[in-house]
Image (spheres, helix red, strand yellow):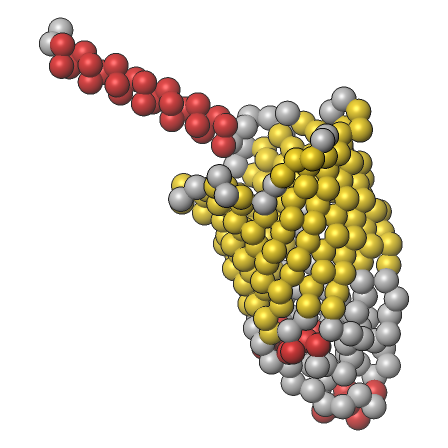
Length: 248
């Protein structure tokens, strides 16, 4: 066999093997990540409602092309940069029951595309969602997360920005003329909003294959939301404590 042809075949086999190894790393054939119960402190920033504490599943894992990242789930498709183009869905609990002269608001159902770009400088999360339920509005977000270790604990500071369209905000925070007459709240047509966010997650091993996770996140609501007469104040907080089994 010609030496040039032999070298080409060997390089081809090596390249194919490397591609298979990379795919196995990116798309594990087993569950890899964290699952467990979490205690969530959720702020109800509307109509004077108080915060609620709920026990909900915590999930942050990959299985094949499927991924779960707390409230975002989806499928990885084609390679793009340092990650993949993703088909994604977001789970939101932003409904409001009809009361005090206001109509009921249903949970949004955001569907869209996104990507997680893992670099040596940290991870970048980019998502673009469209609410296929009632508001028919858009939600865009960009989040950067870093990591540093201190002793046995890992720290993940996060900074991000969220953009909601006027139709998204108006459905949840607007007050129609009829609602204003029935409720006494002033009529309000919500515009688009830009909301910066800061967060911190601390992860600590507590036993073999078990980790504790503490997360705090604050949003500074954009004017389209904060100026609504049915919104309590201009910030929103989320807290979480979870004990998770770590699948390797």
